[in-house]
Image 1 (cartoon, one colour):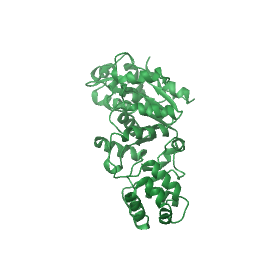
Image 2 (cartoon, helix red, strand yellow):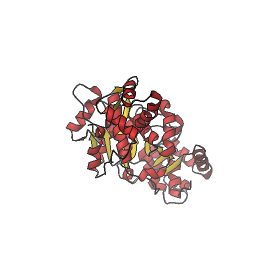
Image 3 (cartoon, rainbow, N blue to C red):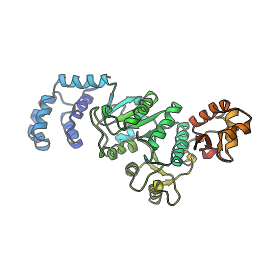
Image 4 (tube, rainbow, N blue to C red):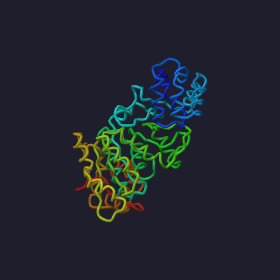
Amino acid sequence: MKYSNEELCLIWLDSFLGLEYKHKQYLYNLVSNKVGIKAVLEEGKDYIMKNIGENPYKTLLNSANDTYLKFLLDNLDRKEITVVSIESDKYPKLLKDTDIPPLVLYTKGNIDLLNSECFSIVGSRKSLPFSKNIAKEFSNSMIDAGFTLVTGIAQGIDQTVLECAVNRKASAISVIASGFDNFYPSSNKSLCESVIKTGLAITEHAPEVKSMPYLFPVRNRIIAGLSKGTLVVSGSLKSGTFYTAEYTEQYGRDLFAIPYRVGIESGMGCNDLIKKGAMLVDSPKDILNFYNKEVKSIDEDFSKEENEIISILKDGEKHIDKICQLLNKRVFEIMPILSMLEIKGVISKNGVNIYGLIRNDLEA
């Protein structure tokens, strides 16, 4: 990857993990578009030392050389990480139009997705199966409409959204809250690697940065900033998911939420968002109509055998033995069809070999 002088300056600055964002921004404004970083640092010595301290200043000064920069670039290349800086043409325009856009994004995958039509779907790690089914339904519909899905990488709703994209070989962006060397949660590392094959994983942190609790709310500004709209699928009143909702409103983007009946703790936050002005949605059509997107015709999507199973399940959930009985087929004949309908986000397995519809637009 070839970087401009301005981008190289940002990569160099971002490698100093102890520097706060505001100091990196100041130093970048000081040295960008100038020849000789070291000379500029020496010229601004008094001001820099006053703001960041003597020892950090000495570290900057001693590292202002081609040898250190080459070390940084070689390390990124070896780890197959591409940097997209705020000076790059590839930097996401929607994210740039926010209050505190990351100076640098570390990426793996298809960076062209950064400026595709993005929509984020988020929710609680501790979500009910019902909520995960909703996430599947909306994810598949948004994929069909041509959106790039954006979310985190946590278990629960994030995982469900990304799995839908991976199964469909569709575009998705996973935003992580650590460096790529310290992936968290480790249990979803393989999922992230699958996302990278057809989508993109990004972080604002250098590879060696470890995950810390305070990094997650900060990370959520990127999820909201990349997206024209955000759907909150689930979350309690204290869920970290609602940092994303707050950023969505702060940036003037579209905020949607799923309504829940009284007494479901993991849905109380969604109901609260709706009370405060988020748009209530109970079908993907609500969002697609809002964006003037064509709702895909159902009948054209499925084979004769798939439509037969869909028709049977319109009456309610059924055990696989009952489905076989009604279609006069054996289990080994039915299983591949059921698996494909699961991948398409049409049905889900609820319990031991019990299947039901999860797409509202298929219900009678």
